[in-house]
Image (tube, helix red, strand yellow):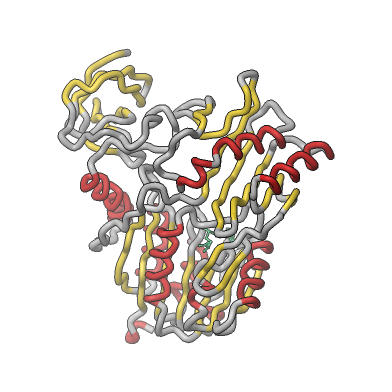
Length: 413
Ligand SMILES: C[S@@+](CC[C@H](N)C(=O)[O-])C[C@H]1O[C@@H](n2cnc3c(N)ncnc32)[C@H](O)[C@@H]1O
């Protein structure tokens, strides 16, 4: 049904929200204060025309915006955009009764994302590599992307060609590209079992194209150069398809907050450590115990430590922190804790931290809702929230990272 709507505010996913008969209608790409026409289907509506535009509406940075599903909000001027992102964190905290001044959004520049999870698909019209169209399975080929590092966009033809070589399926498959310091690390999955001919052709092409590594479903097919990332003074080869912070500048901003807060700690536990993004930086100043569930990530961290010089001791422990969080007694051996869990957060781990005497805690999160839940647990356990800083790692999307810094005052310990 086509109708006229007044947009009340921006929703958590960047959609324009209409208040209607006690419910809400979500209209992507519409802005607060606008009058629009849209085709409604249940609680969503497709924007047809903007009748009265918001003064905050700007030209999007990319010509694929609204068509490509990668970005939700390029059409809002910068100040309002920053306030909205910061508001996502403030709103989640408020919902848990945490009233605090959330810091200014740390911006990440356009053309800075070093990691892109593309979809690839071999069709009658040829090989496609890009992002899924908004609300559809159709692919928008990468020709331009103001979010990604230019090196990735410039290599689109090469990467598409490689996707064509390894594709042994007509189904869409995942093609994860990380621009490391020594070249592209490509981790494909679900592209069909590679035959001997595919392996040979892919190996020749990767070597010729100066790609650092190609893996398929976790198996390294060819690695002419070790992919390298620098964490502080250490150099790490991340495991195939393993977690890497998507934007180098965002990683640096988060790491500065974490290391700054834990600078007085002599012994730090880095929980959900991955390949050592924080551990190997923290080790410049403190002994670090890195705990992580993924064995290849820990092996990469350990290797990075062993080849680095000038770092304090780093130990590693493979452990499922959801099933077996570090207990408060174990935690009391440390005077600093950093934790950076996946989107689900670290509820049980925080219950243990809350009972501990650890004076300095740094929480890193990509999900404001679970961060707020976890901070509530820590605050109820006697921690004082010192600061919350939102970081715009996922520019123009509805995702936002945040770093929260806490201390347990001595009298409460
Ligand atoms: C958001 S990443 C952060 C990694 C690292 N701190 C970094 O910045 O690169 C979350 C990490 O938690 C790990 N992880 C997920 N579930 C886990 C669990 N139940 N126990 C321990 N580690 C887990 C993942 O393997 C991943 O490395």
